[in-house]
Length: 410
Image 1 (cartoon, rainbow, N blue to C red):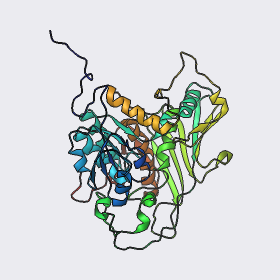
Image 2 (image 1 turned 45 degrees about the vertical axis):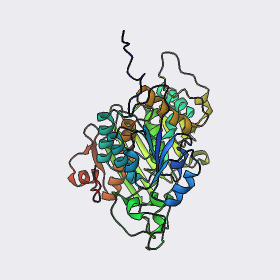
Image 3 (image 1 turned 60 degrees about the horizontal axis):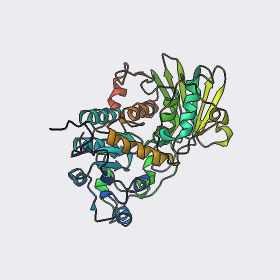
Image 4 (image 1 turned 45 degrees about the horizontal axis):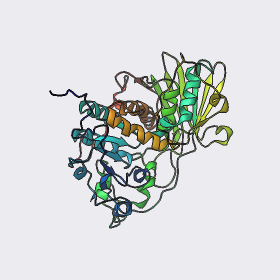
């Protein structure tokens, strides 16, 4: 007599069963990208820099596909999931294409560059039923859970203001336009971004200081610290109603992000404000973090990534059984980055939403995206948190999307 088995017990293409091994493709192998590589389960490696590709290939088992074009990885039917560790301007299009190809995705932060990209990522993940985790690993740090439970259970009272501080953006970046080195496919590195001549100060880490590619610390580490703010404020499904940003433009070099920056977002129902300051107060000598102001007390949460920490008073608190509890993956790893990846892998098998799903990741990255638009336009903007558009400002709305360089498109 035939058996009727629950969905997920048997493996299907792009959907491993609970006892099956996940086969990976890894795209972008510099910096954090190479930390995601699973040496004994990597079927394919991709990087536009041949040196990165060769270095990582030595660390994996077997004979994986080595390519500079990620589309060859997506064509492989034996690959279940991919990791994306590329510069920011590639995150959205690669995630969308991977979802269309039936792959689950771990995409490094920041989630995306534009509002249009974020919407496309969410739509693709839902349409194709994919598990997409954003690499804001602070969501898997026990100290973030502790801080969130302390605040959400009223231990500092009603929060009216959250103050984020961070060191200024990097300056200088002179360099010179020249032919790219032979190991780098510069045209493919640019991909959908506007074409410009190669300059060594644009790559690899330094793309963060170009508006076209990284857009400064507010979108880089901002994705981390603002993720923890939204967690602590129980605001993953909320958004601001206004944004106002100012900054000191860079005075020299080719890097074009502001050196310093001040931002204010206003939220309604409940009413509270969120500010970003570079350099800001640096409480307790901490390089970056957030201070939460309640009507009874305050709380400092430092960092926002794998190194997130908070004050002892929060660590000594235990919420009541009927209080608010924040989920964190039960993986025992002491490394929040590994716990974050394990949460994604667990969800690949169960088909649940991961702790930093693409929906949450998109909602968080809205904050720095609209802040940068306010800075560039030099005025306060009103924001519709439901329809994700500016109110009464079509010039600002035109900046919610950016055209891609042919032949790339979402």
